[in-house]
Image (cartoon, rainbow over all chains, first blue to last red; front, side, top):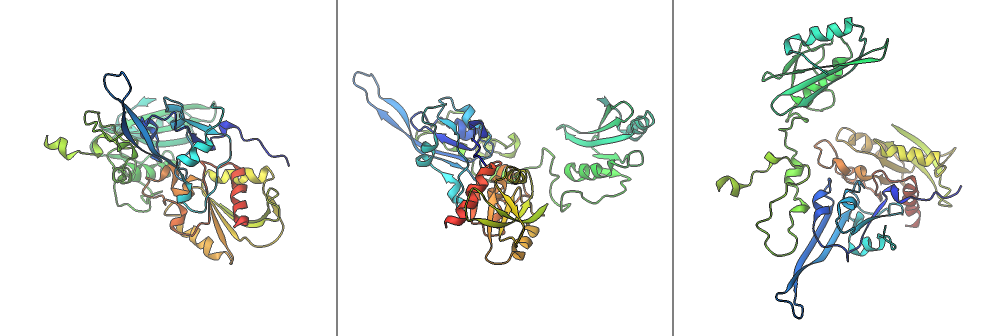
Length: 116
Length: 157
Length: 131
């Protein structure tokens, strides 16, 4: 029995590119089940020759509770910076409910390398 | 869809039956905010025609049972009663259908507050960054109606 | 809708599980798909030892799930399949829905998805073997 290929359209896993994320919070606010948590802080960057420092958002934490996630893809669709994407892999089981909550370290591994 | 007067509800459905609409499809309630609308849908097996009839309940929130005309409406009327707090007059069976208790606010009324959404902290309330963005319009959380949350500061201000 | 069957799992050599499948909602269709796709092969013997809960567990159904768990002979294990069984899923806010089947029975494996693919079920069953 041959293994079936899992298409990206299968809505199995969501990955994050933290470099693209600006902590705009749109995905957090649009999620229907409230399963995304995001924490960030702002930093001032003084640039040579600039009249005033630039303020940037720095992403501290980004977690998705895949136990609650209903894989609708609204977060993927709504991110203005394409920081969220589907990964073509099957859902990953866990041994505890907490084990289904994944942070940046895991989400970055699931972000498709080539970008979709 | 045809709107009829509440007093003519049973007569109108009887007229449908007499016009050959022999299959009862469904009966549903809709919370229009200012009123509750009840919609009945019937079908005619001879030519697959369908007919939808609606009425508004007004402040009494009561409607006459149509089970004398369409027996199949019984379960739908039970569901209408428990989900919208509607009284079915001459109901052959007034037991709840899906809800396990007749206590508590009717499930599908817009005025019924979904406690879990009100009490659970919304992740979207966390402001981006540690700067005070006091001027940003506070966005309403997904799944929470406008009038569920009353900001004490707003009501005093 | 429950069925007690024993299944061989071709994708996990050496694994044969008796599965008491409590299919409460849409996730149960993926269990059916797993069987149709040959990912689970029914075999003729034995009692269930794994309770597979797929779908939304309501307050009304919780006693039945507990009774099914209690009726399983030891050693017994339970798998939660899908968002509703894991946490209540999209219905976490409904007053009549259990926020996860682990509120009533101990769960060893949680398979995320809404619904998870049949392959995810096999991967979850494989986790039972590796522990």
